[in-house]
Image (tube, rainbow, N blue to C red; front, side, top):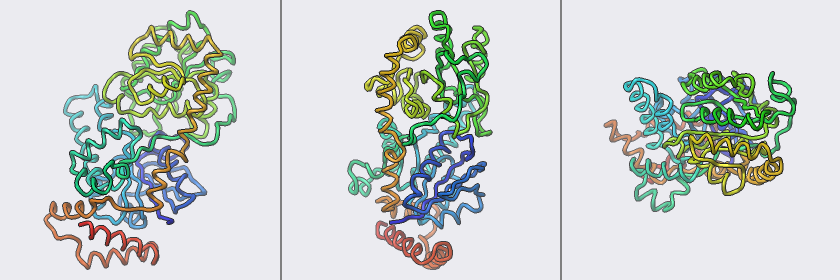
Length: 452
């Protein structure tokens, strides 16, 4: 079945994109081969595609866009803004790969308590709206799946209807990691070695492949580099992007702290380098291919346990050996598959030893790189997005969709949709998509009524 799929994000869709926009873009790109796809953002939109529609959308136009769609793939703070989504005749796929309510605790960790409480409350309102209405939920790992099963159970979505339809909830909650291109990276030019002042062609580059946020630990890494430079003087640490492409994301305290520490140790522009701008999406291969190791160090905590570090995917794509701290979903993979080294959090000595061991041994680096390239095949976008393709091929509302509609009606103290409402909706569907589209919507509506 060819479906109409609307992918909605809040993030900036442009040459410089962060993880949420990249994921939305890749979902749209993948689905367009078999479906009619539109990608819309409530933020800046300057990127275009010849394969699918891409556009900035206004709040007042979003309902018409949803009316057009059979499937809506949604991420970020959207559901709570549009309460009418609870009654929309659309299969809602909620992308929960980023546990933003946990992330909010770290983002505002140094803010006043009242401000932190308000931020968390906003996150929970959005999450409640998404979980109350979603037909399918996407997450990035087994760990995250456990987290979201708990959330859905607490919200009443683990009920006799959903349980009897799918006792493992594998259709309701689907694991869809972040992905990488199935096409190997190709260099268009040099980006770091021989280009950045202070980094020569023969230097050994450690790449920090993303932003610097409060839940990361670049301070331990900089201290480790300070030790390593005494035995490996050609070591260079390069931070890929200090300024987030979304202007609504402020610089975090950790970003300021790492600059201060590098300056204090006398490493800035000699062994530690900061790229202040965000690298354009199409140029990131040049930076990755100029590196010798990919590094990712983070602080211990609940955010780490449920995170899915998307920068690790870029390391896989480029065949970079990885040095990381333990505790997140990728640490076990790095250790199990021989992708590099894993060390305990906040241990300067062991981190320095791990970095030095790979930097001075080209054979060990090559072996790890070969393992990285092998494992990378499991994370290509066509492979990880198979569950999304399956949803769009046979879009179905959740088993308890009728119960959701009845609950919504009771909550607002009004009867369920009247015949007049249904006739009006039918007219809109005919105008927006023709007879075939209207028939699909009617069938979906009848299915919901039967479940109720």
